[in-house]
Image 1 (cartoon, rainbow, N blue to C red):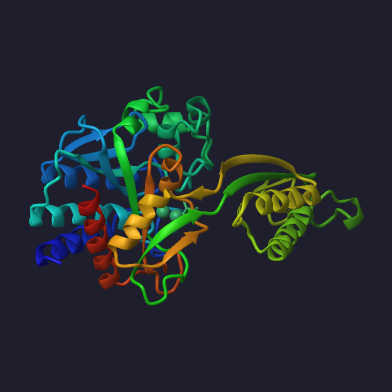
Image 2 (cartoon, helix red, strand yellow):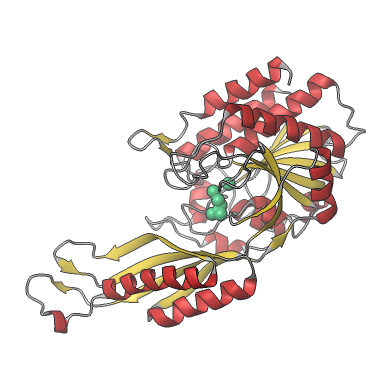
Length: 394
Ligand code: HGY
Ligand code: MN
Ligand code: MN
């Protein structure tokens, strides 16, 4: 790769590293429509403007940087997201955005002819859903698979409405909704992402075949608050017990089904050490290779929980566009083609436009953790691969 492009990659990476980093854990807290998210968005805008790209924010708060005429149609789009899970790693999301700018730099250095076809870089808003509970809000709204009124009414843990948070960040919450005009101008979307398991082995780069169906369910376990020191065990209605049994059952049922079930978030009322809880709210994230397995697993967990359960989001199985993924894999010399259990904006866009993904090797398989890592050489191989497939598509 051209030295200047490598330098650009390193420079962008250095600039983003301190943004939204929580010192105590070393993880990132870049939640949608917060100050940290705003700093990431300002960084994106600056990258677009300093390259002379046409910068815009779409109706749903996603950021776009266009090389070529945004209205020309049949655009090749690449990018990812800049927000994070609570204490997320540096790579999940930002690697795709930084690599997109670096790949564009590489194409321009080389003088790649685009044949009038625009190339756009996108930062999809609120991919992780860490703050308002629903993942891929920006891409879901754009693709019309999330109802605008429902989105505006989502609340964070402090009770702030998504609509209000958006408005405070300077975005009109009543502009959101399906964006057919924009979707109609996209010829293909290619998202580069750090791989989130340890599945690439010797290969620094791979191509995605599919995304497992996955979803999030809220479990409300109801009980009765009472004194921890005076209430006899037989008199208690302690929701913590049903919650604990549900976690263990979910784990066992997932093992039996060859699938995944995780309770990673919990909220307890009144949350006092010396009070029996009156309510436990816990969130299940469950995923499986196929929909029937997932349906049966979640049904089983719900039935045995005794909780009041609400499905908060769901993404059906995604099979990436076969010709496009085969074209990418061939262009890259027969790299591994693999499915993933992680969700992505690409999975949402796949219902509307031809979509593919590139994965960059994750040496430890750790993700959604401050310890997430990718070697710089692999990241640069990712940029080279992305530039190569974009060049081919253009
Ligand atoms: O949760 C996920 O699968 C993704 O990383 N948003
Ligand atoms: Mn993630
Ligand atoms: Mn991601």
